[in-house]
Length: 290
Image (cartoon, rainbow, N blue to C red; front, side, top):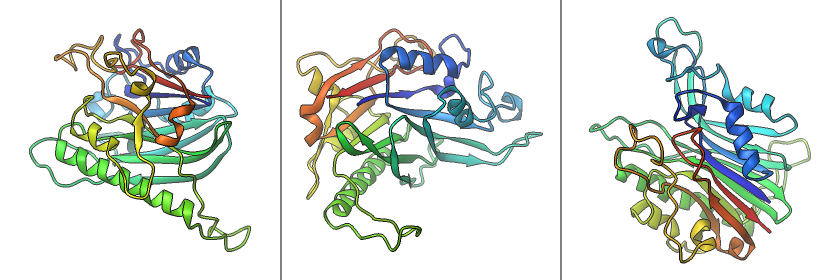
C-alpha cells in the first residue's frame, strides 16, 4: 500500500501559480499511490481576493477537480471552515481536507476537532477526515487532518481528540455492533485498530503536540512516526520553509507527519519527504507498507 500526504495550499506553488494537475502529477511521480491525503483543498474561494477568494484564484470546486484528474478513484471530502459568500460571490467558501483512494472504501467519518476560544489570534474550525480502506496490508483507518496554526493550546486539544477518536475506534474493533439489516444506515460498527493519521500538524518535530501524539494510549495501540521509524539515525527532513521564505521566514522545519499504529511499524518499507517540489509551500510525504 502506497500513500502520499500533502498540504497543497490549494495547489498554489512557490511560483504563485495554482495547478492541481501539477500536484497530482508530482504525487504520482513520487509513487504509484493508492491513497492520497490532502489538506487545504477548497470550494468557492475562486471569486478573487477582492471578493473573498484565495491568492491565485483556485477553481470553483477543487474536490470535483480532483475527481476529474483521478477518474475511477473515490474522492472524499471534509470541510472545516464553511463560510458565506463575500461581496458579489455566489458560492459558499469551504476549506478542508480530502482523501482520494483507488482502493475500496468502507466507512467514512468526519470529525470536527475542538475549537476553544482564542481571541488573541485568528483561528478556524479544523476537521479530521477518516476512511476505513481495504488495502493489501489489511483493512485500516486512514485519517487526513490539519491542526491549528496559531495556538498551541488549541493544537493540544485537537491532538487529545484525535487520541480519543482512536481509542473509540479500537473499542468498536473489540465490541462491534451488528448491522440492523442490509439496507439500513445502522451498519456493522466494526472498525480496524490499525490506523494511519497524517497531515499538517502545525507542530514542529519534537514540540508538544507532536510528542503528545506519540504518548501511550490506554487500551489502544500507540502511534509511531513513520519517518523516524524508516530513518532512525537521520536528522529530521523538513516539510515546510524550504523555498517559500516569505511565509516561513524562520527557515525549514518538519510539521507534516505520517503516524502509524505500532502494529504497522514492521510493515514500513519506505517513508520519505520530497525535498525538490515547489508546487506548494509544503513538501509531500510518502509511505509504502509492504
